[in-house]
Length: 200
Length: 208
Image (tube, each protein chain N blue to C red):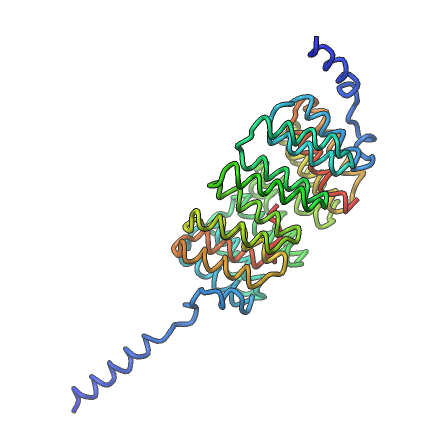
């Protein structure tokens, strides 16, 4: 019965054509419409739910976003990356307190998730939270000082925020971790070549 | 006397070799915080010394040399990369992209042209060329590559999305919508497509 009701409610969305004219419309509304559509097709994937929430937040639909975040947390409560994605959504929406709460949740549910910590540190840095980013990155590094890729990732993001000293620290750590790794040297060179811009 | 002289000469040479050789910089924090060009050259040199025969690395090292404003060195490694893999579209694209990123438009267009001449069925290289060119606003040239791409694979919805995104970054909303619609018509029930579209619209609002 409930399923039938859901399907009936979803009918207008399915029948909504995503044609050229529609796709030229208001980007915020399009972000939400596409998220709606994706959610109908895949309603239970925690990471995707977190991302739908991000689009709803961007479209100004906060209640719907929070509902998605809650559903994401329920689906995968111990997945650090889900909490990070929720944090990114709040960061994009300029909601500092909510973002930092999600980052804190991320560390609590999986205190050893070094890759999620690194990505979250990059996200924090990208949105101007340098101090919090440094602290979190330090924590990721302590978990595995030999992980040169994470050092590069963070160093690169420091470069794009014009934090040359912070970048230098992490590139130096990367080179100490694996001095004979050609991919590492190449990655550092390209980070400087691109001024730390996000790779395509 | 001769033996003593020889000993002094040997000692003197040994002393010289103990001094740091050019290029063997100490890769500490101070070095990475220092002169950007020196960092670029040294890291690219190091990557090259560790993997001197890999065409993709050579092409990327060339990009670093270009960023360090060392054009002759960049050209030399691009030549070497091309000699090693003359028919690899992805290597040719890396070289062209390096030129494009540093503002050498004619070299870039010539480089992308080589993909169509030498590896015209490489869908990835052709579509990446289209996206690279679209992102910097060379829309007519970009569309030429996507036309080739479409002939190779008319169902490549992910590549159509990628191209649409590049057009959006360049501020070409109408053209982007055409490619998005094309992708959506191919996969109307693909959640990844709609998620990606939602991401694209959420992230590129500022350029619209």
